[in-house]
Length: 169
Image (cartoon, rainbow, N blue to C red; front, side, top):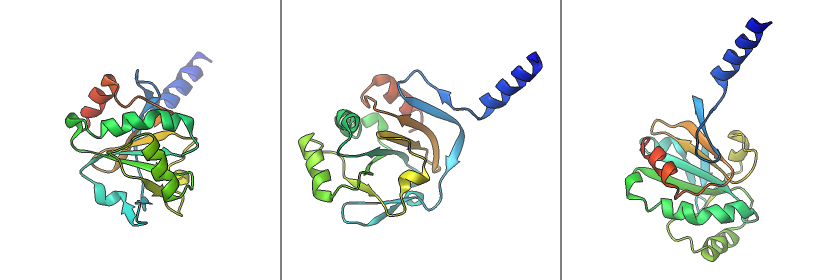
């Protein structure tokens, strides 16, 4: 019986995700690759993730009705200015099916000046990545693989987070 319990624990830990000491950050033990991964910019142009290889990518899924999204967005805006993360591309993707005007008002009300608004496309990217709620941020390495995810809100200006992310830059 003891052997069976140890065996089950070993198998579970092989596929489980590693949790860091940074709030809501989960680091994947196995990298995930997405295909046909695209979203829309403000002009309804399609942005394909595969065209962004070579950059560290942060996809932040949010909605205008989401209070934690509203709370974290200013720190995400400031993260864009961080000089130690010069290879980081940030894409805040609205999954709330809000209009461009409503999304821009949300950014304006929060004084978001460094980020652009992006939208989930009709192919429902949120379903493809298995979102369980918003806000959720997905971190993708330079080769195009998801290596971590933030489930829930986070202070993107937290120095521990910035130092951790700089190792991937």
